[in-house]
Image 1 (spheres, rainbow, N blue to C red):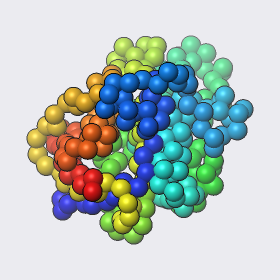
Image 2: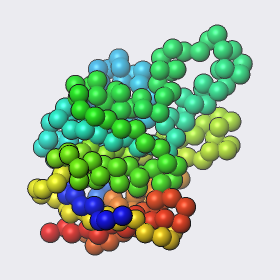
Image 3: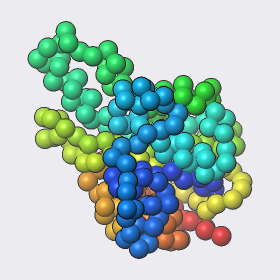
Image 4: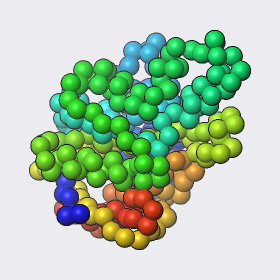
Length: 259
C-alpha cells in the first residue's frame, strides 16, 4: 500500500474519568485526573429525552464526534464520516440475546433499533443534519486501524475532510464471559488534506504492533477499542511514530509530523 497522508485538524476524546481531549492529554503527560468528571457522556446533539434513551455506544460516539468537529472548526453537517467499533453496543447485544431466549414477546423496539452496528452513525447523521456519506466498520481488534485506512483513502480520492470515530462499550451478562471489554471509550479525529494540525503518513506493514505502553493505553487497556490508544498517546506526547494493530501479523505504521 502506498503511503496515505492527512492532517489531524480536530480531536475528540472520552473515557471513564477523562471527559475530553484536554483532560486526556493532561493525564497522558502528568497523570493528573480532573477533580470532577461526568459518569456518562451527554452529547449536545441529542435532546434530553433522547439522551436518556440512547445507549452508551451512541452517547460516547456522538460526544467525541461533535468535540472533534468543534476542535477543527468545521461544521458537522459538511463531513463524510467513518464510524468504527469492535462490537457495537455489547450491553444491548446481551439484552437482545437474553430476551429472545427467555421472553421474545417482551423485546423492546427501541433497543432493537439501537442494536444494529451502525446505530451511532445513524444517530449522528440525524442529529447533525448531515447528508454526507457515512460508513460503519468492524474488524475486531483492527477496527480503528482499518477505519483510519478507510478515512484516509476517502481523503486521498474525493473528500476534502473526513470524520473518523472509534468507540466501544463494556461487556455484560453471559456475553461478558466470552467477549471481554470494560468501561466506555471513544475518540474521534477530523482528517483534512491541507491545513493545521499534526500530519500523518500511514502505510501497512507485516508484523505485530507493540502493545500500547502510554498512560492512556494502560488506563483503558481493558476496553475493546484500546488498540487505537497508542495514536492518542503519541499525539499527546509529541512522538514521531507509532504502530497500530491492523490485523493478524499486520501493522499500520504512522509517522507523525507535529510541526
